[in-house]
Amino acid sequence: MNQIVSSVVDGIWPTMMMPLKDDLSLDLDGLERLMYWYKEQGAHGIFALCYSSEIRNMTFDERKTVMKFVVDHLPKGMGLVAAGHVADDIETQIEEFKVLRDLGAPALVMIGNRLAKQDEGEDVFLRNAMRILEEIPDINFGMYECPYPYKRLFHIETLSLLARTNRFLFMKETSCDLNIISAKVKASEGTPFKIYNANAATALDSWKNGCAGFSGIMCNFHTDLYVRMWDAFKEGDDNLAIPLQKALGMFSVYEMMQYPLCAKAYQKEALGIGGLSRYKDIKDMRYSYYVQLEQLRYFEDMLRSRIKEYDSQKARGENPGSLL
Image (cartoon, rainbow, N blue to C red; front, top):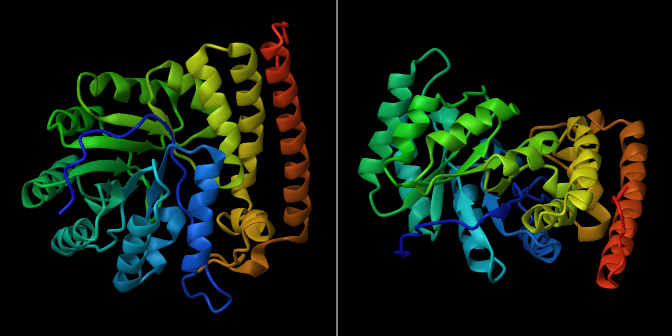
């Protein structure tokens, strides 16, 4: 059994995609390349077996295979949290969590819409969350406001109660509303509970309001740019962070292009992974999407070039002004 993890590191946590072969079977070699790409890009941790991993389209045996593979091949120095429970009934979810724990997951993430049906109240949600804590006392948890099959945002009062169990370390927050995010940060003050914004457009402002980092799907395009913005934020360098935020917010519209197909297409050549998904039809990837992805790559490279120039000017003791 793993030692209980008492905290997770601040920073950038990509939502892990699951590469697939042409026959839609799991591509574990491709997954290893993807994990090491996250590492090379500077990511601080990985959120595995999340919705980007297509867990609702995996068998439980496949989810177990992926969990063990990720634990065994996780790049050195990277943090790890994992979800992976998709059953409708809480009893089965608890059993799924226990198996994933035994496979080495250091912290497990509860998916909010799995803890109560859409027409059930907050009392059901809280009761099921507490039951999981009671039945699995030897591991800490996170929370994920997953938008599928329906989106359930956490009530502030519920979040505060759960945070004060000191069993929650991580939250992927998806409200896309800075006021709500700030209220959640305030509600969890003084606990190990850390909130990671999933919305690219509000990332920098959310960090300034107490979020511990970013965990969003756009990391599957350009993790390094989020890491660079995070570093600039930590250094107090608004001349770099603010323009970079504007660019990344604009780039985030690309997630609307049949994600995860668009991200897999984007990484296909660089990482040698397939461009298929189990829940999105490749036929829905329009020709124009591929053209726009190449245009994204062009502007990314321009941005990286400007960041390099900016950093060189600072290293020479010059005032580079604003990044853009």
